[in-house]
Length: 328
Image 1 (spheres, rainbow, N blue to C red):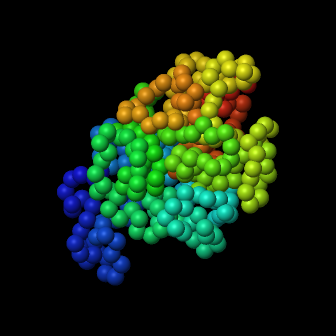
Image 2: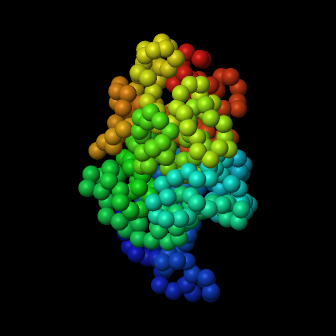
Image 3: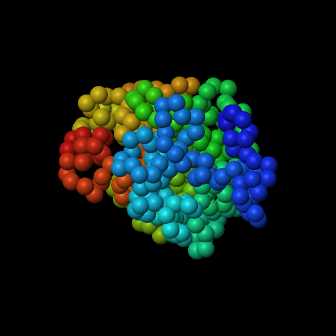
């Protein structure tokens, strides 16, 4: 919930902004990136998703930093205002995927031939997939348990304004995150392709990247995938990671050096806690998700990955090796 003087975000007359004909909607002084561009700090009250002139993710929040996709489009998402205009069908786009299209229309049932990704609206991530759904969301009352978004019914009550998505939000959006101070993402231990829990963070990603969320042995391009068994041809999401020592022995041993939650390869949970936690001793807290490997906005690495997947062999210990310790 936004607090502070109204004049921090709103202005009554466009002429005061030096804009003669095209004032911003809802009397705001700027657009999404205009308000969320800056340098994050330990005392910051506004989450900044675009910080220019940096060389790494130091000081970035949970989503990463759009600066890296403005430099290299393949390193993340490219909403309006980030780099040159681009109209690109999302990788893994799956026509017909029932992608949380609970508001009746929008990007989930449309094509991308003439529209660019945006922060919100029909072609955006935040809010429902229709125009003006973010209206008033910043003023929504906070949840009764701070940070806990467990029963979202609209955009304002949803985790990070992601329509109907559940989760626990770190009080400072993962600035200087640790194993005991971090977001907790909601996941599900699914056993089949469909139906899926439409409130997990991975299902949210599937709204645009549905093929990547599909089953084990299917190729891309089919209208509706089926099958949920080995061999996998894409990395599973919303799937429980075996506990350390589970069969087959040594195949997966999540961060064997500490046996605790690792912020560099985060896992989702089937429950949304009332506070940040680090318990990964139960299978219900070891849900592989899209954000286990990717950041939501952009990173210095290809495909918004958390580490340099295309780098040298030594970089594997900072990426895949967090879970696949026996493969290092």
